[in-house]
Length: 484
Image 1 (cartoon, rainbow, N blue to C red):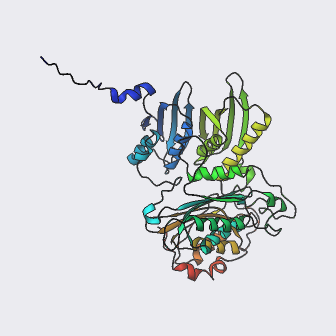
Image 2 (image 1 turned 90 degrees about the vertical axis):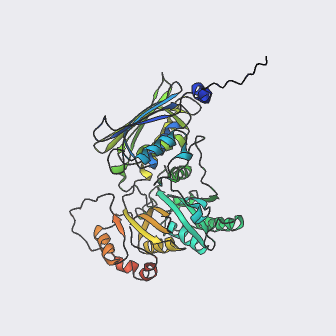
Image 3 (image 1 turned 45 degrees about the horizontal axis):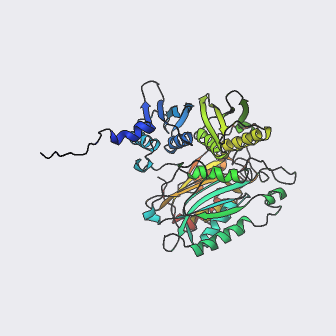
């Protein structure tokens, strides 16, 4: 009798990897325990850069972290976060919940295609595959406008751009493509664009626009097909993280000296920090010898994306965070990180501690803009950004921060933070005049930092917005559409 045998397949074979390496990340949402916040619990196998990945995902969907506990000893990563959505309410949107669970669970490719403020999702069908150009430079009044004008002259269409200015340094990431074909720019032409932009960034700096010391600051432009950042392997690089890295690379944590002959504000490169005493973070570092940790504490005014900024900077300085706790109360945030160097051990020297403290202070301040926020929506065209920034520059307003993104219908959303060239806050009567005199062109204006009126009598604005836009308004009118 012939005996037939068939192979045996263990029904649990598919879960063998999970049983060997541990279960995948478990992400749970609790909307019952707290009255006004959602508790997000994350349990998974520990891996390098896990905390940054988690915080970055929560930031991408605009959640505000009000409290958090992090522990990752013994090969296991356990986090608890108290969060609110962008409207200050519990997280109930199932699309957002699914996205977080899939993204943190190492399945970002399957995550919902949610467009976020942190990571703009470019439509390659609409724009082709754009080229990302990264720039760092010594900042000076009008530099961002000069960069925009140069790209327009070179027939480059800007489909997305982001720029931060801090402590006399400018970092900018711009996505560009060819104006005529709306396609990726070829290598030969890209080399010419780099050369032209480097000429602008390395231009002679005269006493009229900045202090002599700033002429020695680093300037650089480079182009890449994709934004590539350092950090832990597997970490998704966002534009905002890249801006942090670019500013860190040019040492924006060092404040340029103020010279008596330099106008206030210009000597600081139009720092977005505004009132430094009010916004400056308190950072302290002490060692825990018995555990081999350095304990880093950060105290400052609370705001969105604060934890992302600090965790991102610690990761970029090659520090590992095994434990952490964050809390906010009464508008102030308290963060405590237990860190080690990536090769093991605490921060051993005073110079290491001082360097880390300055870098964290800069990370907190970079995003803070006390200038006026301007929001526009327009039909995108070559030279649009150049035209708008030139109008601002020619009339004494400096761009502290800029964000531009093209939507599916080829409309472009532009957000500027601007202030007076001498570092003064823009007069609110001036802003009201701007809104009145722009007429049919809709411009959303927000004053993110409310300025308390002083006892001095009100003075008439130095110039009218009508004078600013008079010569350019007719040309801009055909391209600007009502802001939705």
